[in-house]
Image (cartoon, rainbow, N blue to C red):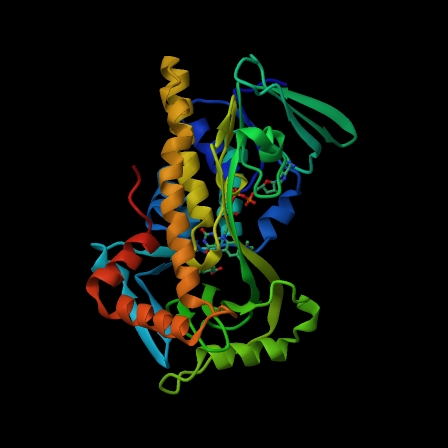
Length: 393
Ligand code: RFL
Ligand code: PHB
């Protein structure tokens, strides 16, 4: 098999890249380890930046998002028994975010790819990448599917295979610099059959730890609590989870959290991670394969979209004019946004979670930070412009 860009991974990064390339007349093939139904059902992110939502519309994949996504013009920050709104629209000149589940975005992108003749190999085993050093004329992706070995020859490989993929570890370790911070807590997340108790997301800094109220639809709530990352999810009963959620989110003017049957629950660890550069020879990393942010800023999917927007533009320039200047600049250009988003995600995480080794001084400083951000226009505006998404380029 032969294609122009071989893409490893059918997450947001891989699917978006493939579809944008198709619209530019560039051929790609996606190799994905999991099944289509697994990808279309896995619960992950939920918040699309203003620019990510626009991008989905520009590439013709925004119809269901526009119909079913919930447009949010602000968020609530809760601390010291107060709830303060950050008004994105007022602070950013009318911008907002869209609450629309990542797996719904993936359904839309997979459908768009299949409708336009795109090739996706789901359930590929033993995926490996070869000959992607600069001097090698033809990088290859090998994989096994339905007991048959395949080889895909391409001009370039896009490593869109997430944090645990094969692409980043295939680069010689000596060529990469790793930056990492692991947080001493995780998020226990539930999906509940219950109407959201608030129209907007509530990020709560509570003495018992962080909690977040989010949603997926007018009948489904998505809720998170800070927990020990080593906790066994089976040891948390639904009653215990609801009791923590009540304790960390209630206490404001008689506001009540609405409960409902728990449809799904899980625990994820939290880390900040970046590799530099995001390129090695003819292999380009995009999305979680190159960087991870803690979810407090709702940025992972959005950063993946920002990477592939640049990568698609660089491939388009190459195939149009033969010039590699944008491909050569890809890593440096991406990393400028990556580090600003790392900063924001780390800052939101630090401001909202309980750190076991915090001193009373640290705790007072944390609450003062929340007080500042919610009472100063400059403070609130900085949060708002980052949350809705920094401008592209
Ligand atoms: P993905 O989505 O991990 O996709 C990678 C794909 O590659 C496949 N793969 C392989 N395929 C072939 N061969 C191999 N060897 C392979 N190894 C892996 C995988 O099966 C998968 O299909 O990476 P991508 O595309 O870079 O997208 C990144 C986002 O998924 C991620 O950053 C977000 O989900 C993070 N995130 C959030 N991001 C937001 O923008 N807004 C949010 O509100 C938000 N909330 C969240 C989140 C992530 C969370 N978890 C579960 C970590 C909330 C949570 C709880
Ligand atoms: C979600 O709805 O899953 C969600 C929302 C906001 C975040 C993280 C996750 O910061």
